Length: 285
Image 1: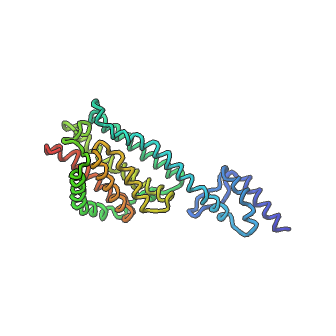
Image 2: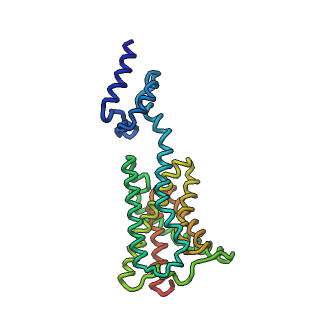
Image 3: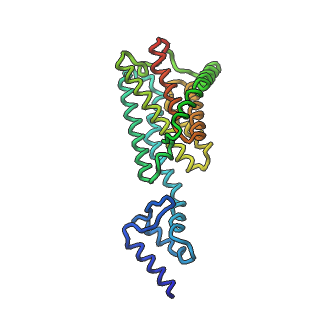
């Protein structure tokens, strides 16, 4: 009888608190108002010997997958439509480099801010998306070492795809990707730096984190993130889209290996810097 009274007391006092002292594995208070009814549904588990964290984790494990799927679906709804529009970019004759650069910078920064909000809301660390700098010097060195064979391999793949008859990006670069004058070249350097940071955060850090949770497969998460990454490069033709997909897969594999975004960020920056800044400056863009 005393044991049953104790269980009833536990249920009532837990519901009366604004936030109960239930703690998850990270030491964070997790039993909020909107989870009180979950406790009521599971209170019978307490009576058969399960502790409070078992009750919470049982409920959370069933809902976390659905929550993460909903979150990543909303995120992709914001991103994918504008990426698909890149396939029709050549029809937009009024685009300018400055307009495209500023629009891209603002879009990418806003998406990174959204990702950081998701992490904050879910009490997740920025380390979970590869923002870790413990081995930054080694990661930068690896990026420089890997970049030469990576760049040669990507060029070879693109040439083979073109030889097979797939469409390719026109030469020179479209006007909306070509800087003119010192001010625009400085803007181009800023652009490729922000794009490297933002796109690796989006497609490698965040999407692999969420897709891995949804699919329970790091390999499938890497493939899906690479496919989504390639969608934003429709202006490069079918050969370019496939080539960019291969680049995204390489970046994803390096990220999964290193557990840091530094190496793929630096490689991404070098790839874009050469194509958007260096080669046009040398008159070879």
